Image (cartoon, rainbow, N blue to C red; front, side, top):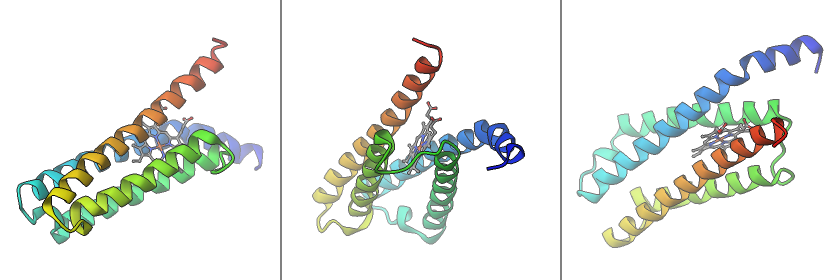
Length: 141
Ligand code: HEM
């Protein structure tokens, strides 16, 4: 990468990270609301506008994630925390799909919802912990 391009990456990095975090929190909040609708026996969480909103948020979330990983030269299956995070995100997606649609009984859907929310929390904690560790290292602590 040329020096000018690298300067642009550094300049935009904090904004891209803010977009990523805002999209991550919106994604989790929308999923929790869709789960609540499912729990109460409503189909609202699976209606077309809600599904499209969810796709849009998740597309922004992933596009920002890939941009950040690229800017930091992070490589999945090489950088351990990123591998952990991607594994947990995959688990969250599978459990989320079971909770909102695929699990055969209401009880199984509710269990999947609880586990999916735990997986989301684990992704968030891995992201935050990694951040804290990185800044502590940078400060020489
Ligand atoms: C549910 C999904 C996700 C959540 C809740 C989430 C959450 C977060 C949070 C809170 C941060 C800020 C950490 C901090 O600076 O304290 C962050 C940063 C980051 N995330 Fe995610 N993320 C998600 C998905 C992903 C995915 C799939 C990737 C993989 C490509 C990814 C890659 C990154 C990178 C590279 C950073 C920057 C880390 C740094 O500044 O050192 N995220 N994420």
